[in-house]
Image 1 (cartoon, rainbow, N blue to C red):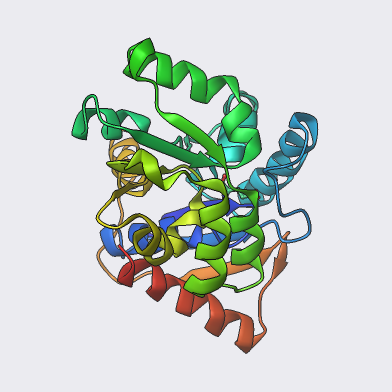
Image 2 (image 1 turned 45 degrees about the vertical axis):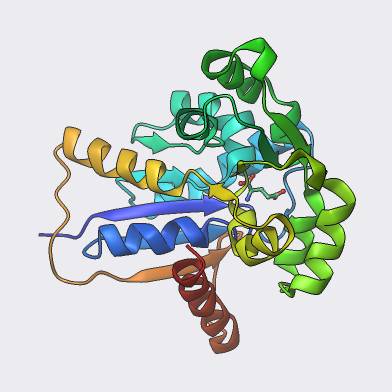
Amino acid sequence: MSKVKIGFFDSGIGGISVLSYARRRLPGADYIYYADTDHVPYGTKRRAEIIRYSDAAVGFLARQGVSAVVVACNTATSMAITYLREKYPFPIIGMEPAVKPAAAAHPGANILVCATPVTIAGEKLHTLIEHNYTSDDFPDLVGLPELVTFAENGIFDCETVCGYLETVIDRTKNYAAVVLGCTHFGYFRDSFRKLLGDVDLIDGTQGTVNRLISILSQNGIDVPDEPGSTAFYQTGRPVADPAVLAYYDQLLIRSEILK
Ligand code: DGL
């Protein structure tokens, strides 16, 4: 029996945090991770460009014979998911900022939603908020594009990151929860905690992987038990450099540790 292949796609390293959790839940699948390193960041680009790059990524994964694709990028989901689902025949699982679980866990409390500028301005997020909050209770929204730049440049130290965060987040609001609405932001959980104390950091990783598992089962796609493989690509080019592969391995581990 040939193994089930699952494609993951993000503009860069953010989706590796989602891949990390998927590998723990479904260790028997073969994973193909596509980082669009030639075009990162997406979060400050125009819709047409994001659709074009997302189409190229999913088209590449389709040619590798994937059974499903996880768009492990809130920005690409916000701008391109409808287009992708209409074009490709396999299930495509997207990611949205976890505003619903945040509202359920902290009714009436101050909540901050962080994402890229494109996701923050996008209609999808505003519709999601209107469905899950009353108008006198809307969460605050903030775009944090600099965190994507930090992550892509391997800058994770709390001093630099907290220095930036304190210029854009109002600490006097005493947020009960922060929604991490960009997959790059999960790598900075320690900085958010250092700045905001005992705050609930909520992301969409678990919900997305739960959805992947239920969609695979609804489509009769079985994942075998023997351990699967993971291959990485940068804008369609296979990653073979041992230093880059070792770095991606570290990120897989960092995603586990920082949960
Ligand atoms: N990781 C992506 C997200 O979840 C976007 C980062 C970027 O390319 O700006 O939105």
